[in-house]
Image (tube, rainbow, N blue to C red; front, side):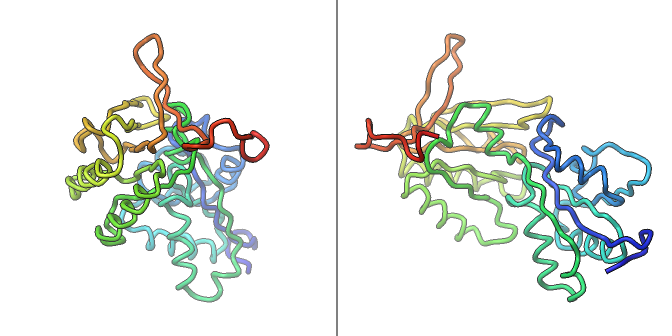
Length: 269
């Protein structure tokens, strides 16, 4: 389908900007940004992309994901090369799902548009890399936000993950509108994990105000985090390796109880 952009077919690239520092942006994501005529996203993510001639910026609030997605598809249908940006990875609690939801419920001609998803380094991977290897065993990711699903469902999924002994990355852990839910999550965790279980609080990873704290589950509190924090609750096997400076590496072994000494899975990758 040709649009008004010099007779060229429009397209949409859904781009993960990574955790913050430009060094974490993939070459494929950068190439898609370089080719874009229009940039769409939440205000702080749009601000991370340098201005240049030929790029029109469309920044918006953080609760208008479907409106933002429909705008992107409409622009692409008119011939624009649209870059829809998310922090981290666009497929993890971010814009890729919103755009495909808009596509699923939109006019048929949108489905002919070329749409690509350019992955980025999501917060739990960036945080894990800074801390060591806390995701070395089985793990899962859960968003504590109840904006798009009821808290009862969030709690049920968290309970199931804790019962299964996953290391758990908590996205969207706390906000002014949800001040109690992270503490509720920690209360659930204390029913399943030992008091000394490491909890990683990784704030603003990849940015100038980055900070990492490791706190025992018995001592961690919701007030220690904000919406820029990735919270990672260790599994029962997650361990600390103390460094000479008093800090520690965090890692979760790939083996579980009773399997020590067996050959590594997947050829020891």
